Amino acid sequence: MKNSQQIEPWIVNGSTPIIKDKWIDLRADDCTTPGGVGISPYYVLRYPDWAHTVCLDQEDRICVVSQYRHAAARVMMELPGGVVEVGEDPLQAAKRELLEETGIRGGQWRACGNFSPNPATHTNRFHVFACRVESREAPRPDASEDIRHEFLTQDLLRDAIDRGEFGQLLHVGALWQALRCI
Image 1 (spheres, one colour):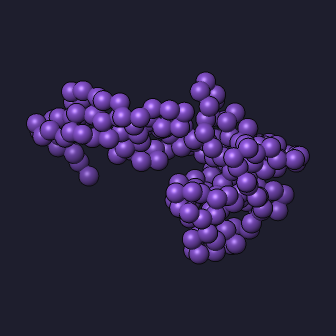
Image 2 (image 1 turned 30 degrees about the vertical axis):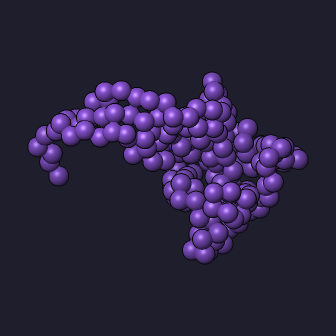
């Protein structure tokens, strides 16, 4: 498909902070499109980057974690991972989160890409890694986390996706990408 003209970015005429704390930075931008259409307010969420891991054991089963997700008001099955701290490398964040949430130290790490969770409103990136279980120790979750982990075969994980138990779409996409790069 040939594009006859280049798409230009919007002009940001001004930006107003709405809320900024440890977890969220929301601003309202006053924008003008290249065609001259004004869009104001246009809300932009600045989150820290996230790093998640598809970790396989010796039998090629995939490590998943389950925890309560307040906005969804239910327990969700997901991939281990979380926030990339300020100044932290995404791979180091993935290793730290895997160890904290599951007690697993991974080996044979591979970067499988980084993606935009929602390019319309979010500024952050979602980093995907794959690894193999190298050793295990006691998990060290944050004080606010109540996390369980288990290993599922690909068939059982597909069933969990179909039932909506593994229902975080970013994690479904990360799983797809990681299984292609292993």
